[in-house]
Amino acid sequence: MATITRSLSSKVNGNGESEIMLRLSVSRELRLRLRSGVFIEPSRFRDGKFIMPRADRKTLAKLQIISDNLSSLE
Image 1: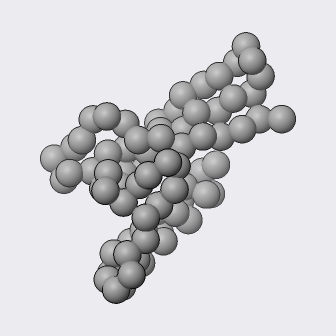
Image 2: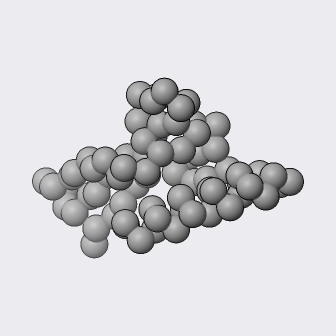
Image 3: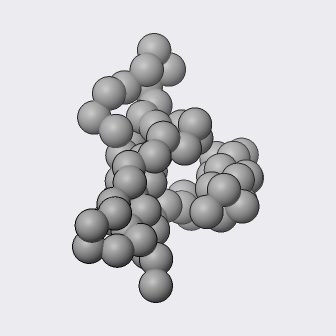
């Protein structure tokens, strides 16, 4: 069974955001690393999961859209 692992690119663009990278493990011989085209602030992503704010509704809505886009891509 294939697994998908999320990680951040080490490169940061001009907006201070990094691209979320996807590692697709199909078998022991076939492992692919894919660029998602989805960008996020590095402080809002840890261990493959999003860090949601508690009070800021605008940031929460933006992160929810990013999460939905990434889930549909996966």
